[in-house]
Image (cartoon, rainbow over all chains, first blue to last red; front, side):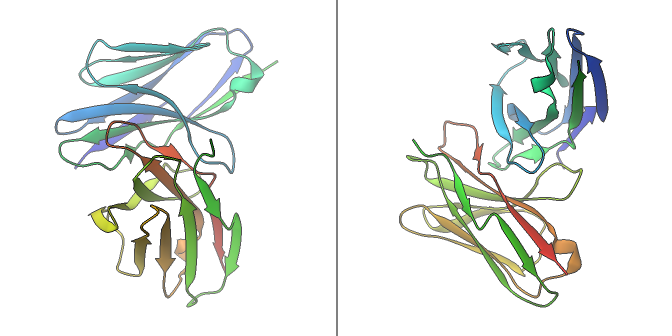
Length: 110
Length: 111
């Protein structure tokens, strides 16, 4: 069974303090790894899709990378508006469903 | 371009009742998936519809059923509600080549 594990569970940063969130996965035949942002009480907002090891994607202060076992979401010089839960999910094999991790709750302080 | 829309936004039911949640996919998307998200957890896959048929199903009991209409919109039905069914129910739409785009969710509370 596919497994996705995210760490840390929660992270508190000062504004401008860069850091990384981790997503490790155990799946049979990864077809895609997805990062989402979720604000409280709202649906996940799509950020990135990564398909193969070595791939990187960037959007504003966020950069996602992928290896054969894990993915990192790097946050450079975060701002308070980056505070949210960041979810990682995988699609594997012939399945078309997303298997999610439990998320990392990020809080960026002024 | 409207994204994924869901209705209602909030719902309160009592144990044993039945509920129907509705979803309209993003324009041009033909596949709809439903997820259940308990507080503090990641979304859990319930099932996926494509061409009006259930294509894949997660580990949810038969009390959870669904339907997709010719215009690609979808319904999620839950019978014999339990307290543990209280959660945020998310609808996501996609095309074969895209990632899934989520709606705002329906918050279901079972008393």
